[in-house]
Image 1 (spheres, rainbow, N blue to C red):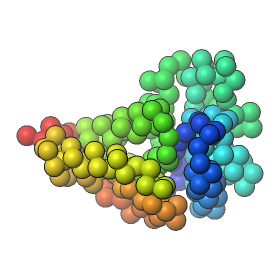
Image 2: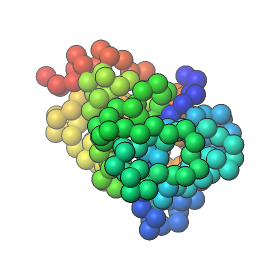
Image 3: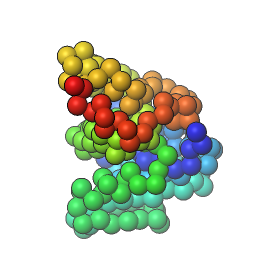
Length: 195
């Protein structure tokens, strides 16, 4: 599948290990090189800031989506020219998933986890059908991987639901996995409840 535009979920914390910044920069460069547009949370700090800085410096396209209350406290990245301001967090999350070809989650805190798990839930219900790639830098997402697998092994979810996401350890594996992801469709609602 041809990937033209993706959404990236990632951290706003500036205090995380440098490895996460390095991997974010590497991914941003790969995406720009592949002419893939990016939608992100619009923040100026942490991995969000690094993502935007790198994309802009390398001539790529990036769009920020942020609730007005965050912009009011000046969290918005000043160099991102394509910006959309929403009224609520719910509206922001909904806009993230519109007209994209895939979703990539980098390490992050509660906001990143919430966005990622909502996207997985929507995919389970057939409301979102695009690839979900989870970049597992330094094994950051190992506990989540175990938790999701436990949901399946304890029959809270179906074995088929394991196809909804792909965990990758290296930046180089992100784009190939977006392009070659398992096909998913709205019919997923039929087995969402794991009867």
